[in-house]
Length: 386
Ligand SMILES: Cc1cc2nc3c(=O)[nH]c(=O)nc-3n(C[C@H](O)[C@H](O)[C@H](O)COP(=O)(O)OP(=O)(O)OC[C@H]3O[C@@H](n4cnc5c(N)ncnc54)[C@H](O)[C@@H]3O)c2cc1C
Image (cartoon, rainbow, N blue to C red; front, side, top):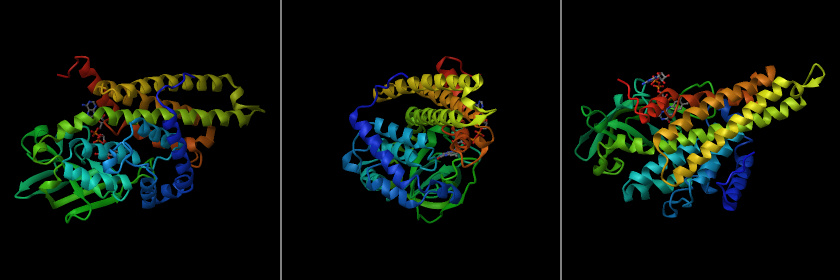
């Protein structure tokens, strides 16, 4: 195996300590959380108290001011363990960075420490029933009335939506200006007119709460416009700027998860006997796992290289889109083979490989579908659609 060079001893110490946290605070409860359709709120507070939320935020805002490799490690560990109900990644590395990068000083001081402590859970609401891939088609409006915006509309498929106390909502502040009329508003739980719908029943990610959100004449103070007045109608630009890291996170999770599935399938086929011999002794088994390991290794090297580019501020959206589409497709292919090598047991929920198979499917859909990734990549090749 090609040795990785990204992490130093401090990173590895963090990995060990996060593993201990998972063993104590997540592993004993995750099956129950899958049954109930959401994690317990307590795990958010415990993660915050132990320094496992918003690590990359500056210390002044409750973070540890560390580099994004710490977040990469956390994403890898959660995905390798199959703890798909834990929405720390979206909270820590999507919601908080929007506030850090675009928020006013007052907004940063007001919300980042609460996100870092787990007192508040964050979500981001872009998708609507009629606007997923085509975000320019967002219908939710936020129209300025004096010192507030009047927010009306509905969002769907929102990760952490049911637990969320703070939601970054994508809305049209100038409905006739298309993408140039889009803004990001910070909407808080408890604002009159803001309601959460049912938790949506999903094929996988069963412990992760995914919800609809409804806004009816919600009076959002003008101070809650992300970045203040200077950022009005600049929301689309902010969304585009954050895409490389958001997409790379999906690729990181895909590689960690497929490697874990390969490892546990290797262990399974060594001990499972058919026709009096281990499944591992069949040439087909050995070749399938050799192929999977080769592909996972190639994917890991590419993702590690993308991470280095990201740290250097050089990861472009097309390259991140390649990582997102290719690694999530590969994850699905590899895990499907792993299920096959488990036989009927691979289809039983109690087997981690079965849960991984169900969880992996959405990786090709969210964060921008893989078809949209190919649109982005082909545009970067000068192949614009007519
Ligand atoms: C579990 C889960 C969690 C999610 N979490 C969040 C969240 O936290 N926040 C949030 O805002 N959203 C979230 N989403 C929404 C997700 O980002 C969207 O589902 C996704 O962007 C696709 O949009 P859509 O579902 O409307 O599909 P559609 O846009 O209707 O796409 C349908 C099909 O058409 C294809 N298609 C669309 N346009 C093109 C094109 N130009 N060329 C070729 N093919 C095309 C798509 O690839 C897809 O195959 C989540 C979704 C799921 C399932």
